[in-house]
Image (cartoon, rainbow, N blue to C red; front, top):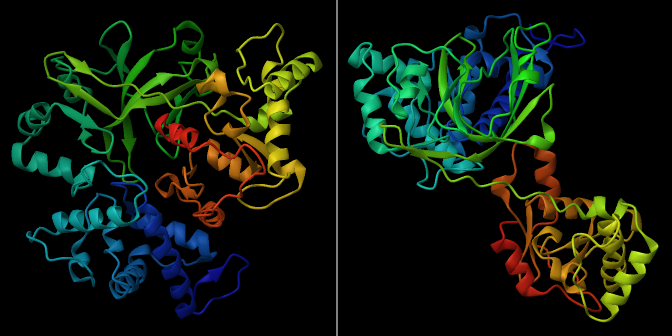
Length: 474
């Protein structure tokens, strides 16, 4: 009999229903990341943890029934086959999937693994927060890809690797598995018989990097949920602690993370091109920010990528809490009154940002009657004057009230972080593709989506500035 965490027994039918609900939601969450799958074991552990209902039965004796009901529910709701996202530890879908109810167009193949890959793509296209520009392609799991390579060509890398080099590009979305450093090195014109070092130096500024992305005795490397930041820390007592103090920070690292599945299967996977964030790195950790998701190569040594650095937060909230200089406040107030809105990056002493923000905020909030233009919140501790064209982007309009909107702190953070835009017509629009697996955030953002902002008594938001913000990539 299944048991709750407090030891009370739960009828099998009740447990099954709660497990199905949890599995259904978890598979939808898995589908939010392109080419992500989950193993039977991981799903079983998750739904027991989520529901607080556990069983001592072997997973194989009950998870199949859960997935059977999930598959039927998805088919009845005309949703893509969610159970295609659940695989065995070896990456295979299993024979049972062929019998599962599905709502999907007919497949042109009888290969069950290829069918499941097609169905997974339907799931990603429905639920993924980000997809490749071409909409993605059906992709076998890394384990199955490597198994089939070996079955068709033995230990030879020639066929699939030559095809990859012929394409000349590799994206972090592709999830192409590599078995060794040697295979990766061939993309960059290096013909090694063996290679074990953590890096391959390509030129003065760029290295290929093979970090272990799983627990090990030397390094604690973590990848952010969005895959955009790698934090590298030495394990206490490990043999590489001194490296952090003796070696210079890297500039660019073309990163092939070493992955390990629950079954012990290991492979390398391109994660992107990363750049060291010097302001967040020291002798205890190195932080790397992804600046490119795609690389180009010719197999003879030439390679390239287009680094795109994320915009820094303008953080008007922090500026409003910053120290001010009374003389600068008076000077900036005179400028604003005269219709001169420029603020240089340095005006004598420090405290420039806080002083300018104090003047700007007083004008903007006053125009809006000290009320959030989106939510109507009037408690002053929760209001901030948010720049439309960010402070960092144009020094000539830093004090311009038509370059500001009075927002609540939550709305300002969504606006600043790029989750919310405001159209030139004065309506909010949530960028849902940026919202990850956070149901509470989704709920809160839904409350401020497609809302017409309040018009201020003076200096309404300049439509050109709202357009410019989007053009700048914010």
